[in-house]
Image (tube, rainbow, N blue to C red; front, side, top):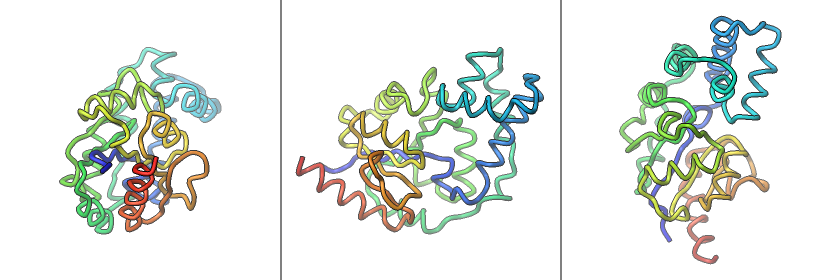
Length: 218
């Protein structure tokens, strides 16, 4: 069985975690919680982590507990000068262009942020679409319903034909449970949370080849 759709996470996957971009965005989330919602500064960090663990994203947690304008939140937290953190990635682009399968971004961010990142990294043309936080609402990764929405939006009826590449073990684990082949990005080994792991995009083709062989055998 050949894979027909590859789902890629965005933040800390399409660009390196070491870039510091997600750290900057996380800081903006904290600022929003303090400035827009009036949460005391000394409670912001713990509350943001609590929301992430309980609801999947800080946004979902905020929406469950406060009156909030989603568009205002997304614009605020992603108001970061991307060029200060990331730039073109020819290695990633070459790896993507070498893969015949359709490629989609699957992110808990919004499409506007995803497009900006893709433009700066130089891979926008490599992707045929984006499944963002609005498209899967009211769900988000790693909820099963979010994966079901992504499959539906991609027109995929068989999750075994799909791959999820993400930097978070909880997401790759959820993808496995849905039936996708999951790859943990940025790790040396997948442990029990993914089917494969990689740190270098040049390894992606080999990981997919091994995954296809595994699928055929099972």
